[in-house]
Length: 160
Image (tube, rainbow, N blue to C red; front, side, top):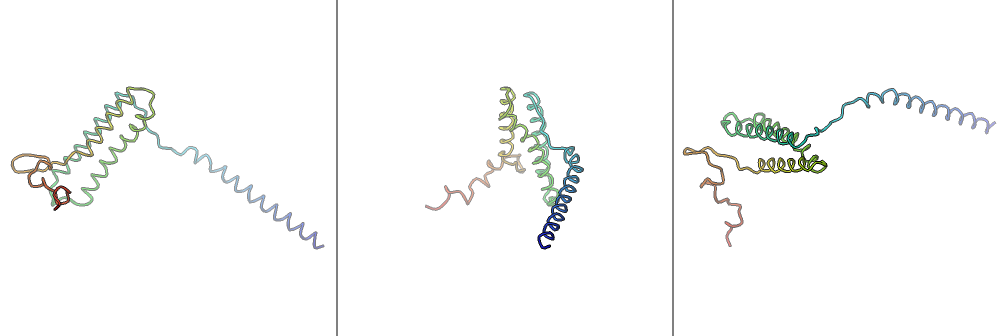
């Protein structure tokens, strides 16, 4: 009797376990088409003229955003206005820079790779351009401004 009871429990456990697996498999199968049809991010496949065009448009828009921030009066410079604009500009640049980097490294077309390298250099230059400062006499770059020539943190100005 003891052995029969054990076999009966084993059969019930095996059937219950199998039924649970069957239900779980059916549910996964029912919801799988939803996962298969979900959109996935795709990168654009540009050729050399497309890269030149998109890169020029992106840099033009980014420089426009930077110029708008430079003209913004300090009294109107709120966190949302400044960082929101800066964030949108960075997204715009990265939406171009990402596909161009991939195409520069993976495209079989030499012209596309060359155009991609040129675009990436221009994007890098945008990120390293010194900001302009409005002065009474003219618009000069900050590194030409005599008031800011010597930085206190430079090692060349440190006492010996």
